[in-house]
Length: 268
Length: 364
Image (cartoon, rainbow over all chains, first blue to last red; front, side):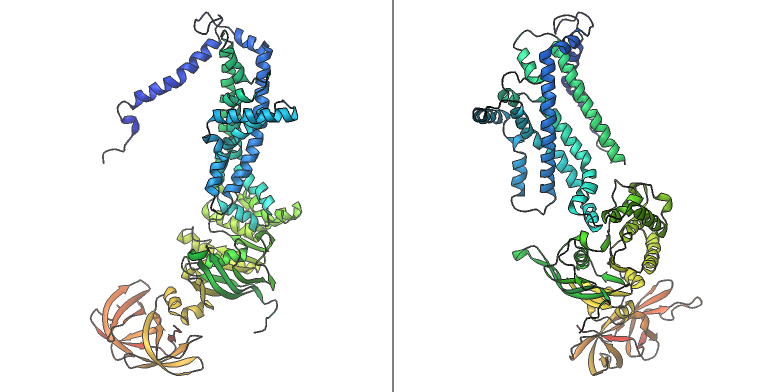
């Protein structure tokens, strides 16, 4: 054979790849650029300024929504990751038995049920509870976010557990470690990158959610995405671009931090 | 037979291990009993799937027997979890903790036992010295070679001073030269620590050179337990004779049994003296084994006669394959000298004389 098959040498592939990259990133680049527009339009460029960042920062509705988003994401991602870790341990550190496949499906159910269905179901369910208890705080949003974050946290944790050498845990038990100590000293430190990946993923997913939040939230409980959606019903200014840009930066930051943490772990 | 207290480190009594359930049930161990003495280098030898690793895992506590008892110094440990057994394991893949240093790996067992820090430190230093790894104590286990990982795995398992050390084919991942070195190293460690070693291998040469006693296993059963000499020279069954070293099988009529000896009349008509395997049930025709180096080729008449079929030169010795007149095949191993060839050629009519103490009658 003359040469190995290399996708880069096939005619047209480079062009297709370029088009895809442009389609993905051009709108985002435009959005970021117009965040720095000094004019009132999101389409007509008038000059560079930080005006809209400044305005967003001083808009108490934006700041409140952002804080609310972070609160919900933090609580939901943390609880979801703890639950997902336990679920992953229970489903991987066991001998296969009939019904295990069903449990995988059950845990991943939020990925398969259309989000709008879950949203409507939660709306009805929570409104009953609201009537019974009179409570109408952020708890509902946190609970809902926790529920749909679990499968996202579960996937990387389970993948990590499945790729782990089981004889390490056996060796720990052989060396007098009780199951709890073996988990704390061997399984957990090796699982940590997976847990972190799950946490980050869950955090970003929660931060990003619109559909379920829109249905579950009470009055005055806008998160950043639902606030932005609400703004589109009115006059749009580059303030939206500025908020989106900050949002984007936070996401990139999270992904970068995670990338370096996981890389460091792998090189040890 | 009355129990001799304190003499055996591990006593396996009627242990069965069944995997699966219903129709797909497989007996990995079929009612195995064996007694392993204190300070002994004991080897479980057999081909893959014979149950040797299963037996090791039962002693370690990674699996639990379906039936039977496992006694450690007279106490039944079969129901205990692994972390309650004063028994440590050297794993086939070493299973070193990748997130810990060499020293942390070695100290892990002692730490789990709740030993004070100063004691752990002292013992780790002692262990590092024992396996000659002092210089690398702060390395990660991924930064050391396979042979060094092997030493760390040994040190880690020996550090808590277990009553019994289990070794699951620990040398199989090493190259030939390193394996030879580690064989000597293991014998030294066993001698210096005085700990009972139970060693699992499929390598018969390794078993013969290292062990005080060997148990040969096949299909979930222990076929024979004995010293390397016993196993090699007095195999009890065809499987044992065949698995360990090269050998010749001959059919013979047995007469004059007594005192562990018998007269065996070969198909050639010659009658030779033979030792008889334990548990031999008197019958008309039995199998007699003769090791190739215990027979001598002559140009005259011997106990057997035949034609030279093939001659293979091995450096230290020459193997001469003979087709006997009874149509059985027979191999003779002859020590080489520098000055002359083996003295025979293909097609030669030859006789084979079997020494006085060369033949063993098998029980199956």
